Amino acid sequence: QVQLVESGGGLVQTGGSLRLSCAASGFTVDDFAIGWFRQAPGKERDWVACIGSKSVHHSPYYRDSVKGRFTISRDNADNKVFLEMDNLKPGDTAVYYCATDVYYTDCAGIITGILDVWGQGTLVTVSS
Image 1 (cartoon, rainbow, N blue to C red):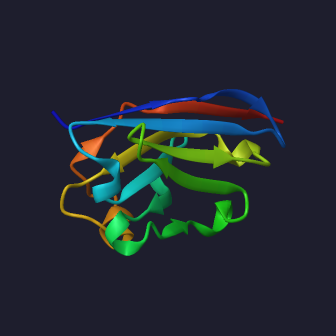
Image 2: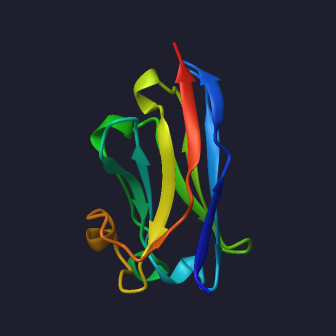
């Protein structure tokens, strides 16, 4: 069974850092592109970051608002993908999800958000 489980969310002050983890089972993270998304209260879910599969040399992509602050990476040994978030701002408060689709090895399809496999989400709250 293909599954993603997020962890690492919590409450942090403005300027603080958090590291989110996305643990995969039922497939190998190195073979597919993996994305992080977030949904703030009352807003639509947005793409945040994506990392491509080994076939595209793990190319990372970020939405403009998080460039220079967020870093996406993967640990193939543990079959996990991470989102390191630094210099957090209140506007980053949201439920964060990781997601993938067995059809996508690069990020072009991932960033559409029309994906088959989603985690349950982890809440990040940034206080001012």
